Image (cartoon, rainbow, N blue to C red; front, side, top):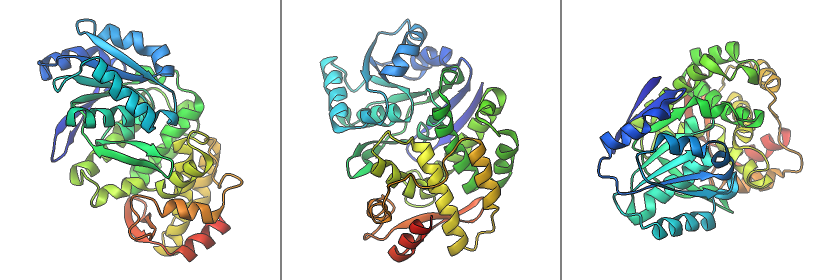
Length: 356
């Protein structure tokens, strides 16, 4: 097991990473949340069918209720959020209750927002079950989607702890592994060129996303995320750099329809586009051909899905949370390991999207 400490202005907590770490979850709750009155596990149907009995056996001394939500992005809606709150009220959760988020990034975002808003905020613990969630489970950003934009309704609400049990990753389909690895690539590009070289050398196929190699990649990704969150918990400055690739990526997800293309696969396309913009705007020196060749070997699509209009994508990007006054701002790279926020004109974006 490895432990990464996350320190923010509002809270300090630990991320426990390794095979079997959930065996320590019950002890953690008893020692750190001793007055807990009740526990609600929120998970999705896929994870519930596979692993809910395993998690409940680790919490055998504690009384738990469980609410299952749909699998995938369809869970991050007002309707499902409302259903979670209704169930919590029916179970008579109070301000001493605890929510355990058991699933991938979608479940983490949804259940974290339920915890943040139920009775104006109750504690929650993240138990991620995907590679993608190494990013979303750390840092306290919780939200649901709106038809006009992804993650537009949410809050900052830090967990009490994160228990990242790698045993739960063994059943992930290749598409989900690919989606999660995209965020590891992002962390490397925005902050750590040595780590970027390491993942390109050591992860040349999805079969490499396992064992010690995967654990090392996840730990370093979480360390990078943690260092940025420590500096900027509420995304008023450098935390925006974690959105590298997400401006176009979120627009692609929305235009295709949430869940049609995975989050990470959309972000990869967004990163390729952002790197092209970086070469134009910041003068970035970067071996794009080497990068895209590596991505294609990993199975990623590196161009826009067919049928997407540059004009519609631009309209979506204007709704991005980094945009100010309908002016689109992109996270670009000055060099690998050094990101910066730039305002990009509509004309340049339309031309670049058309060329792309």
